[in-house]
Image (cartoon, rainbow, N blue to C red; front, top):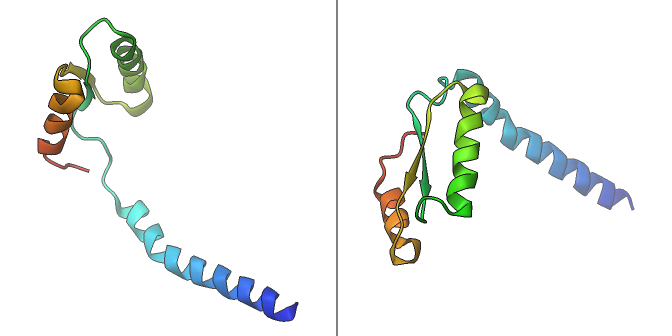
Length: 92
């Protein structure tokens, strides 16, 4: 029984030590986002996915203080939107 408790305590200590460096990164991070956010919708305008994305895009600016743009990329079973996502320049 004692070895089980010590093993759990050791695992907890290891977890805490592993998470300590992350605390510094969160404090020194720049404000995000700094550019408008694009939501890629792999379907045409007017569908349920598009309407849901537009409803979300209407409310997000109030919460995060940044413009949100919905971009429809229909076709090829969603591959056109996936290609646009893969080609996007990482910024965060």
